Length: 494
Image (cartoon, rainbow, N blue to C red; front, side):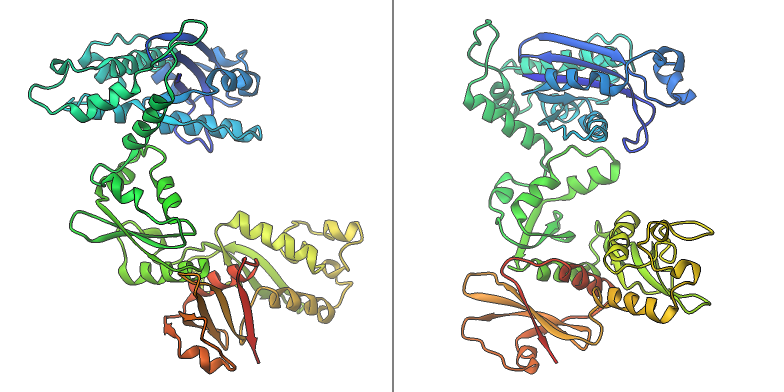
């Protein structure tokens, strides 16, 4: 079964815009068997340009149900269905966000009729819903309204499923064997007790294969992905010229790359990237820490075209240390960028994570919320009012005793001046990975077999390949040390 869905929204960003209308048509592979459509109250004003495009006004949605009132209906109707839409990423991402706001993980297999149309009806001047329907004779009423667009998409989907060996439906002389085989696989077989046709397990599997194939980079052979290892390491995307255009890392290379291709891309830049991928190679590392360190090194060294965001720093926020006029050491979270000369004690993925990290340290080491910038007030912090803060915020606790606890918090996340090795999994069961930090400086990594033994730090220097230390490397190591990894141990020297 397929759920053909179209949404109208207040804008194009799922994180900030909301749904104003939803339409669902259930298709059994031969015909539409159920339908549902309703306006929705988005809980915010509809921008004038959206009203001009869709015709949906604020007055029209003022008495309409809110999304949480129809959420159960949406779940029940689409249960067990493939989620189909024209530019499916747009509609699917909006629905997932609405459900996420309700604390529900909405997950369906997706199929994009734009991608399927490009494959089965090649050579069209445009694959926008309006122009495509006009060019191939599909009626489209109420354009830019959910019911009208969803119904047209359902008719288009039915036409795509109905394409058979009648090759005259496609451009003259074109080899249609691969596309027709895929459509034939999509066609349902067998019947349910109510008389509707039911696909066989083989054809269900074929549908799933067709969905995956529709999302694969067009230049990338399926055999390349099938042969990827389910192991930890770094991987490289190459273009047709063999150039590395992207470097990534994962604890399971096969699954991570499947995730890369699991959704249909919409932006021009993302589509350009996907269409450039012609080959994938990899290097196993065994250790997740080594994969992180090696990936960072490779990106800075190779400067792949599509790793631009990671060439400088992959940690845009961090925790900083400052001392105020009264002598109190103050931890604070904030943005980390090239214009900020301060080096963070620890850098994190975003300011939300940095804020949460600081809240944890404030609670663990009994620090002052106000002095850490987590409680904005001219008076005492909230913790002082409930007797959890010792009064640094009002000058009751002297800087000397307060700063001792700040130093403890800093020591818990810093490895400055320390010498140690992280011994982790290797690329095979017969070896171990070694990451060496000497006097707070990252020296590099290497591998040893079971015959290796070391009594002093110098023994480890002989088995590593040296790599450059930098701010990103320091943050990778700090973040990694915060959690204990299975099969990994830290050996400290001095």
